[in-house]
Length: 185
Image 1 (cartoon, one colour):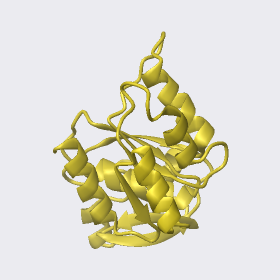
Image 2 (tube, helix red, strand yellow):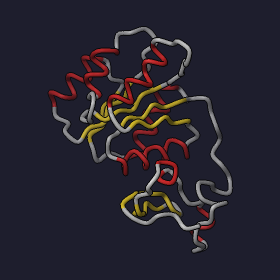
Image 3 (cartoon, rainbow, N blue to C red):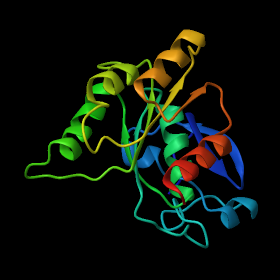
Image 4 (cartoon, rainbow, N blue to C red):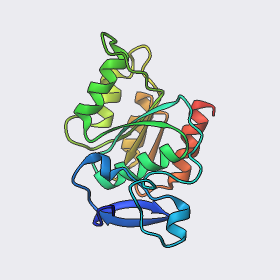
């Protein structure tokens, strides 16, 4: 079974490749194993999404909110490859829905250790979420990412308590390092 091939950035043999956008979300988050890619073998259903050695799993969960599906898939893959569990949200409304389960647990409690959120996205912006929910007890640390960063945005994010802010395009390794630093892992 070959993966779709259009518009989706994936890691294949340590290089980012552009693949076709998948029709469903599950297919969009698959990546190719390093050994199969470097050998030039096409991906099969049993090697999609797995490398020869799966990354070490930890219990840290990242709530990722990014409306750009390609960047969301790339960041999800990067975090998972680093051993994190990821809950990916396509917009601010979905972000708020997941946060409600953590901040106001009822029948469905959800534990999130850190949030990585775009600032500008449909529904609610990352700044609005931080402004409106950031003072609530158990609100996790929040890293903001933006393509529209300026001094005022950075100042406001810091004033509201953002753990960090990254301007797009950013170095994914720097983002991963910041997540590790904040979580002390």
